[in-house]
Image 1: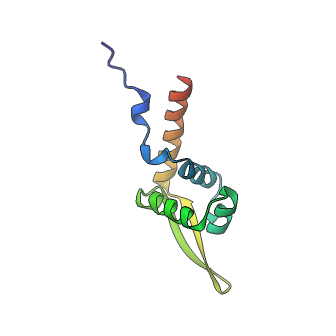
Image 2: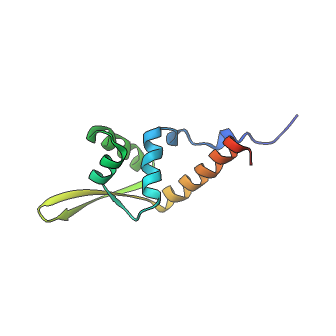
Image 3: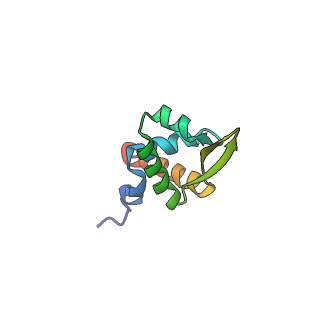
Length: 101
């Protein structure tokens, strides 16, 4: 009987959502992103983006910051250090599952 761990067991289900994957993927390559920019690039509703950012924030994968720009409050999101590490590990595990390498 094999004692090798199935790589699928290491995949955190919180990251399986296509929208959450897209958000994390977008944030992976930038310091931070404005809410409006994320919404336009992902082509999702304000409500859906807000909901998904809330999920990611509760899981401590991202950090949300409100900043004043002129007379407007801008919501900015960025990967947390823990989030970056967890997402990179997720991608490596996903690669293992998909390609067995």
